[in-house]
Every structure is written in structure tokens, then in C-alpha cells.
Length: 291
Ligand code: NDP
Image (cartoon, rainbow, N blue to C red):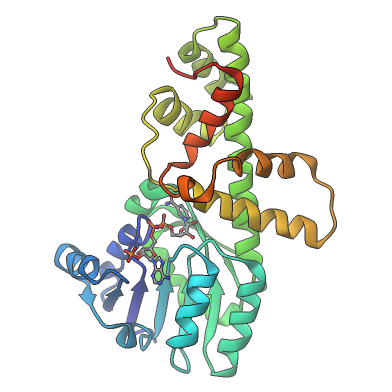
């Protein structure tokens, strides 16, 4: 039975995800690289700020760091105990998930790739979609813990499957964003009111999560609030394109989307919300998408 859970990585997503765990009624340990954030979290949500050694000694460990490389480095230095389940909510690399699952199995622990979707607002509301790959017995142990911050939990297959689904999902999100921006650019050139156009699209077959929740709120408003950094989306598209290339598939649209999103340098992309990628298109066309 799970008696303790630890959350590692109190960033834009992890801060909110970990805030739902105290309702489970078990000990909730939190660790963050910048230690003060863990103390602030403990004060606000009743979690317990601990040293990394205590975090990885929990029965279930949840992590949400930027990349698989960050997780690999952490686990190499601070492996979990035998019998533990590590639930990695990072948007990571499928091959890394397979290797980590094998490495942890050797010490009697389990690793699940369990990336999340739903943006920071979904994390705050506890309604994230969680796509899980890995050992099914470990999944059953982790399920009630994941439920604390999830709206949908879907077991998608063996190790790496969760990361693969997440990478494809985010590449589709980027595709929707770019395609909608191109569509609105055409309408702007035709002197159509963009607010009215978007309202029509949102009640028609061209709608998407991007048309409903991102375009007006972040792009047309010119606010581009940073909740999901563009460099993280570039990483996710890169993971999806690696999968395409591993299987020598020729998938033209996805690869062209990567080219567009990679036109912003990584160091600059780190500072921007993903929606700001549209400013590249605006520069190309000399047409600004504002109301
Ligand atoms: P943030 O950059 O906001 O947070 C990253 C967290 O990881 C921070 O707690 C940071 O600590 C910690 N961290 C960074 N590098 C290391 C390291 N080398 N060792 C230990 N800790 C480290 O990222 P997000 O929360 O936005 O994203 C986390 C993951 O979730 C990413 O994989 C992202 O792609 C994914 N994701 C993000 C969404 C979003 O809307 N933001 C939506 C869905 C998934 P410190 O405080 O010290 O910097």
C-alpha cells in the first residue's frame, strides 16, 4: 500500500500538480532544485519540503522536469528504493523511458512514462490528461495517486508509448496553431474582422483547442503570456520527428511544422510562450494578427 508520495520539480506544471496530492491523506514530500520553492509549496499546501534523498525514498515518486536528460541525470545519482514506482510526468523521449524502465526493474523498482496535457490551467484545476506507458502492475499502483491531478488517465502501452503520444499531440497542437494563423492571415489580407472570423470558426468545423483557448486569448490580444515555453514545444516536436525518422516515414506536414517552429533560436524560445512562434509568420507576411 502506498504510504508516501514525493513530487520532484515544482515548475509551472509541477507546482499545481503537487498541490492536489495532500487530499490523498498520505505523506506528501516535495523537492525542487531551487529549494525555496519547496518551502513555499509546503507552507501553502501542507506538503513537506525534503532533501532529495528523502524524496526518492518515497513509495511513489512523481517527477516533472524539462527533459528526459534531466531525469536520467537525477535517477543515476538518486535511484529509488526497491518496490517503488517512479511516475515521470516530464514530456520525454520514448527510448529514454525504455532504458529507465529496464534500469529500474533491475533494482526492483518501476518507471512509468506519464506525460500530461492540459496546460497550467489544467494542472491548477486537477483536470490533466495523463498518458501512461510501462508496466501494468505499476500502473495499477500509481493510478489512485495520478488521479489526484487528472481528468483522464489513459494507459497507452509499453514503456515509451506515453511519451510518443504526448510528442505527437504537441506537434498537432503546433500544427493547429500555425494553420489557424495562416488562415487568419488570409482573412486579414481580405480585410475581414478577425474577431468575427474566429467566432465563426469556433462554431464551425475548423475549430480546435487552439482556436478556442489560445488564438484570441494569447495572439490576437498580443499578450503571449508565458505558461508553456516555446523551447519545450520545440523539444516535443523534435521527439515526434525523431520517431518519424526512426521509421523512415515521409510525413511532410509534421516536418514542415518543425522547420517553422525551429526558426526561433533556443535561447530566445526559452523566454517566450509557444504562441509567440506566430510572430515569425507575421514577419514573413508583414501582417499582424491583432483585433
Ligand atoms: P518549468 O521550466 O516551469 O519547470 C521546470 C522544473 O524543473 C522546475 O521545478 C526546475 O527547477 C526543475 N528543473 C529544471 N532543470 C532541472 C534539473 N536539471 N534538475 C532538477 N530540477 C530541474 O517547466 P514546466 O513545468 O512548464 O514543464 C515541465 C515538463 O512538463 C516539461 O517536460 C514540459 O514539456 C511539460 N509540460 C508543460 C506544460 C506547460 O503548459 N507548461 C504542459 C504540459 C507538459 P527550478 O525551480 O530550480 O528551476
